[in-house]
Amino acid sequence: MGIITFNNVSYTYNAGTEDAVSAVKGVSFEINEGEFVALAGHNGSGKSTLAKLANGLLLPRKGRVTVDGIDTFDKKRIFDVRRTAGVVFQNPDNQMVASIIEDDVAFGPENIGLAPREIRARVDWALDAVGMRAYAKATPFRLSGGQKQRVAIAGVLALKPRVMILDESTAMLDPIGREEVMTVIKKLNRDENVTIVLITHFMEEAAQADRIIVLNDGKIALSGGREIFSRADELAAIGLDVPLPSRIARRLQENGLELPDGIVTQDDLINALEVCAKKCP
Amino acid sequence: MPVVIENLNFTYSKKSAYENHALKDINLRIEDGEFFGIIGHTGSGKTTLIGHLNALLRIQAGSITVDDIVITPKNKKKLDFKKLRATLGMVFQYPEHQLFDETVERDVSYGPKNLKLSKEEVAARAKEAIEMVGLNYEEIKNRSPFDLSGGQKRRAAIAGVLAMHPKILVLDEPTAGLDPRGKKEILELISSIRTKICPTVIMISHNMDEIAALADRIAVMHEGKLVCVKKPCELFSETRLLDRLNIKMPQVTEIALRLAKAGISVGKGIVREDELTAAILSAVKGGIS
Image (cartoon, rainbow over the protein chains, first blue to last red):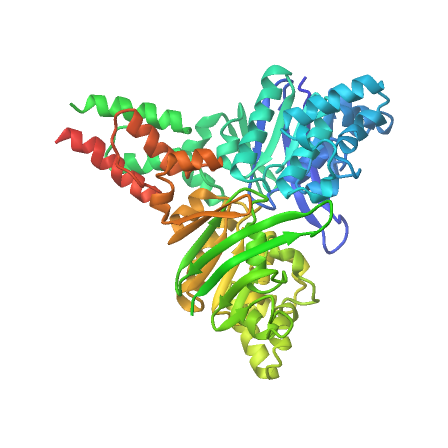
């Protein structure tokens, strides 16, 4: 069984009132331990609702969600659910609790009753991982949005969750900061076997995942590996983009260059063009 | 009249433990009709710089001329703020956080009302601005701005600035946090604002692909200093400078450089997708003929 499973899950905000909004509609999928999955979709497609359902912050109106085999409806074990699956949210300002950065990162480990030495080690490790160690003694309130978000990520990391759900956590970072966070995420996935669920509308980020689930109107519209980016028209129709190298490759193909399908990354494009250039004497 | 900044210096929390010299001797001239980009890391001084243009931050040293309004430390108390803020419209980061009124129409009318315009003029301006940003006036005027979608909220907030009929529009990361469709809509809106209302646009962006494709010139800020002002094609050809400042180049430029290294010569100064496509076609197909 996957570490996270969604079985025919639906969720409606303000159910039963005239403001009812059906955000997730009968979604089923499974995420296996150690996987790196991207959930992509335009604003309002239901991505963030899925994130909240995945660690029991919201409970399904219909269907079942399990985390490491535990049903999120199981009130007695909800803290096990949240220790297994940590969420980093969109806005770091809502996630800061302490007035000193290292205290903020230590908040989670303290709450689960770790030994002081272990807390110290985890805080240092987590701050290193997000490149914020130099700010350990500073106050989070004077940081930029991007720096704050890295501290928030460190706060979740310090709990060493088996699954880390990032709900558009890179949306407020600058390109370098975003790249740093992506590097950290991939490293955690590769070296520590942390399962990653990356919620994003940056398709270049989604392309780095093992598997991409594309949401539209509360349902799964597309799902699969990088090959889904060859379906540019379908993605455009639901308000998403394909990565830039895919776009360029497509236009080159339209102009008569013989390039293989499935170009997603810069490496793909450059390799393909090298082959193409050699063919033409 | 252009925007001219001379010897601008600014320090946050002067004489305290948090003293931070955020702007250091900035000299800059932005011409009429220019699309002027500002890039730099978080904390480099971009937002502090534009905060001076409509006197939200009180000038400490140097001078700024916006249209025919001069801002100096000496006249900062006598400044005609209303005129300044009607001349230079400011769209902050996440402008939708500033929506406050009960209906979209009232929210958009707030600025022009404060200019003491006639009721009719205020109403006409609100309608025009709401339509300008691509929202349906009749459908939306009586709705709460808080019930709109993220992209719609942002456009409603921009409408509030446009209703002031600014001559210069300043935008601080206008596409941050939007999905690809929302981004495209906002960028198209900015282009149409330039042709219809306000040709001079100053825009801060972290998205190098976006700014490289749009801006006539780009200013690079670093640790409170203005490092340089260059055309996108020149700026992004300077790999050493970009490396030193740890600024990522547009993806398009990166691909062009990597292709050149791989022996497919596509030429220098490529910053737009259409340029890259054309250059690859001519480099590869050129080999055929």
